[in-house]
Every structure is written in C-alpha cells, then in structure tokens.
Length: 228
Image 1 (cartoon, helix red, strand yellow):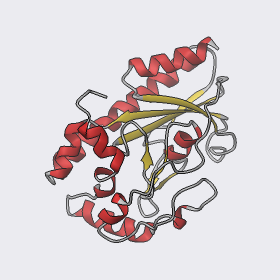
Image 2 (tube, rainbow, N blue to C red):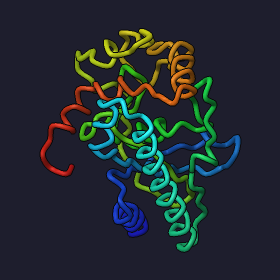
Image 3 (cartoon, rainbow, N blue to C red):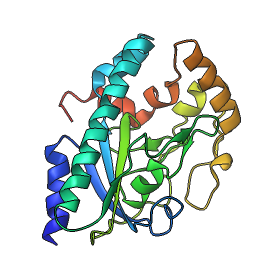
Image 4 (tube, rainbow, N blue to C red):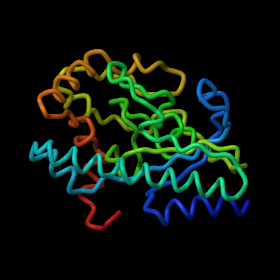
C-alpha cells in the first residue's frame, strides 16, 4: 500500500522517531468511530534527562512540553496528509485526548495504541518502554479509516529482571508484577499513591520522573554516543 509507506515516511520526515500501525476498532468509539491507529513515538532529548538528574524541573518541563508541541504539529499535519488522500483522520492531540490527572489516564491511552503497534511495551512503572530509548519518549497518535498493514502487537513485557524503576519510586507505588495485556493497570502500579504524589510535586513546581530516568533502557540510550 503506497499510502501506508507514504504516511510513515511523511511522519518520520517531520521528526518522528518511530511509527507503527494498529487495529484499534471500538477503542475510541465513545468519541470517534475510526478503526485504525497510527502510533507516533518521539524520543526525548538526552539533555532533558540531564535536567532531571540536576533536578531542574522547570527547564525539564519546558523541554518536555516542547516535544509535546512537536507531536501535536506532526499529528495535525499527518491528519491533513491522510485527508488529502481521501480518507478520514483524527489527530489524537493532548487537547482532544484530555487526561484525567487523578487517574493519570487519557480517553484513549497512547500507550495502548503504541503497544498494539508493536513499538514497545509497558514497564513495571506503567510507563511505555521502547528498546531504543527506554521510557524517555513522548507519544502521539492519529486515528483513521485509511487501510493500514498492522504491525505485530506486543502483549507481554520485554523487561528483564531489572527493578530499577521499582526501587527508584519514592512512594513504593510499583508492584513486582510484570505487565501483560491481560492485566489491569492496578495489578502493576498503585495509581492512587502515584497520582497523589505527582500532583503534589506539580503544585510545588517539581516533578517525578525517577522511574523514567532510572529505567535500564533509558540509561542505555543516554550512554549511547550516537544521536539515536
């Protein structure tokens, strides 16, 4: 399908680090009935992780939201690109996919589309993890009726026995149970303890990204001398 190759190449030309395709039929039916999902992964700059290490959260969040702005622009341009080919599309931007901060959950979680697209898995921390960048990533998505060649979903954790994120959690919210797509999120993380702490940190102008920055694969990404 030339359109599939075209949209993937187009999104990568805009700066996407990884792009994948998934069957999301029925998952977004409460607000839009489009059966196919395009997952967009954008790696976080290595400098952002250094800001976390330095506990310069003001600069970190400025950098992070800059990446979200890039994802929003990519998604909207991708939506327009698809519509110009005669299909329907809906860029799942942060504004359109509003997050409930108490539940730390979007209407349609980007992580769900990303795992179904085979781009990574859910770590012990409940963060999305990629083999290339660990959890130092931001996620976006586009829903569409464009025919797509779906990627192979990842349904089980590919973390080894590393417990870095669990040990780094300041409120012991991370359970020993590894993720698989048959579990509930509550099986792997105490989301109430996590959200209460995170909201408190945000109000104080701080943050909590220890589970992300201490991820074994995040550290490997940071140690890599190349730009990837």
